Length: 366
Picture (cartoon, rainbow, N blue to C red):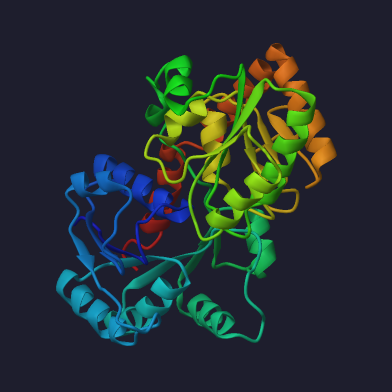
């Protein structure tokens, strides 16, 4: 009898874990006969193609309280109707809300709890309490980097590492580089792209500083930022104050693959990542990577000096690395090809999906 899996996540707005879930659903729909249902707590869906998969979607909208206790009962009602073998939750609150249903119905609970490598809550906090409860309730705790498990102090038999995967066909048949640059209004010979939300943990200040400093040395490169968020007004003001006329902030876009394909180098200036979807996209499109994630999961995917550079968050080393890449087409090509091979060998949706299948099958007849 086909397995019945109930997926539960806060939302499908633009984000790393959200993209990962949608890609997994795409894989499972094509590769298995599982009966699946998806529960969200927000009706705004950025990854619209999830609707084309034919998977029933329920939305449990929270009230004024972000941590709305009524979600427990509404989720239980959906689960009783669907009768899942496995609940697969994504994130701390989804797992917390799912835990009583797991206990009530006696099904298994698989929890994707670790998607970064920088624990952002204090030990004695409400979020820490939720996380500890989640770890106790879950039958398996999933994460996408060894650095993440280390940061959150998770070890033992419940721990399971599954790396992110990208669907390579997303990157085939991209628009011509010159056409995309023309649409974006870029007239310089070179383009550097950073795909990241405009939030505090992404170092857009460093992005602007590097661009402004390089503008004093060379006029042949444009820096393009893709993403939106609460920091955007401050970032735009900083661009003005630094007179970084070589920076374009595009906000949220649905054609990220075309924008990255038009770039010469992909950068991610950040404090700590799990396995970054942006970095995977750069590599899948054959772009060399420059990142400041020295303590997180980037070193599990980027080979420093071979497919990119992992550098300190300082303008000098970054500017030298970028100038070296821009001035050496052969090096860019070599590093980009090495990165593409890494994705093909280790980080495809097929490989990710197969690892999730092993998790689901491990609960067979239990």
